[in-house]
Length: 280
Image 1: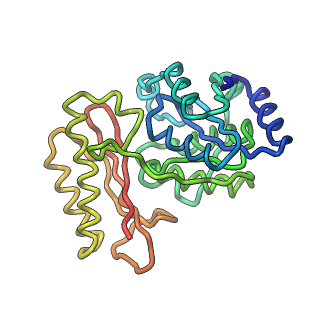
Image 2 (image 1 turned 180 degrees about the vertical axis):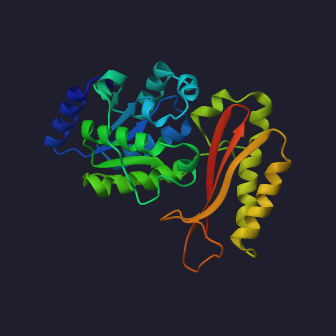
């Protein structure tokens, strides 16, 4: 497994593989890898000849400087996991490489970037669009793999690819969960034992949402779920909403033949966790 640190080296590596007729899969990450990331790598290895993973903690998508500082960095352990999973190349640039000068680009995605996460993390998705567009330039892959836990991010990236006419297929991959239901996340490493145990409540509420949706409208479901979260003394609910899976628009009534997503963000101490579940 090769480890490359510059855009020029990464591009040259990828273009050489493409000239040889090989199909390239790409998994962008911020490191602190877990089985959720590895599932993306494993899917890529089954669908491509070469799998590349980037590890870069992107400063422009953090609207909280303390959150950026606390984000776990485990590059040596990450590389061992990636090699075992069949990764062929890891791209590990530093901030100067990715941002030799300030990125002044401002993106608009018809409101996708301003609801849910965007409402509580202003500028977050603009930072995501900045770095993902740069990574797609550095790694001109055929396929790119993203987890559905970051459902809104996935929707934004699909729009980014359309807007910039980037020739890459975006492949959504299922959320990978711990045995007790907690969605795998690099941030889980920062949970205290008490908060880690209590955080399973998040997935239980999402499962309850699916059951409630069989006989109730979204407005009533939101009232019930928000009330349940407010009773939990260890978790602080930031938002809970039910939106359609294309435009992320809120709804008061379920429409037939439309897929909806229940999305939630919760503070467990000083760790912010997000999750979602599909409602048919």
